[in-house]
Length: 174
Image (cartoon, rainbow, N blue to C red; front, side, top):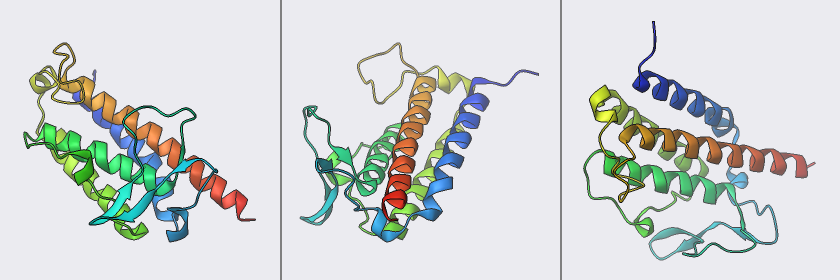
């Protein structure tokens, strides 16, 4: 019996999430704002909450992110993707705030997972062929299936970054 595209994409998401779950319960509050290099991006207390470092143009060299920044980044792109997938007006980057606390951040990410699973559960095979509403609004050849594959790839990339930062912090502590 062959698996449907939706089944394969869901399996891939579940696999990726399980890798993130290897790290989430092991994160300590101090891990989130640990500065891994002299040139880094983080989240900082700002107007109305925690604000991420950000530039519209790619910097050279690229700043090394903190775990706080990586978790904000996951929350940002995933929140906006869910907005698009549910037909809501997508929030602007500046509207997506980091929770400011390790435990709250982990719960935020787990909540986004629940929302994403609701999106995945309601999709049919025909829905997977529809034009992706995000992140390629001007590319009608890219489908919702592509969008789901992008979420899986982006989450895997961010999971690897978060995990590597966590391991480096632990190794540098002694």
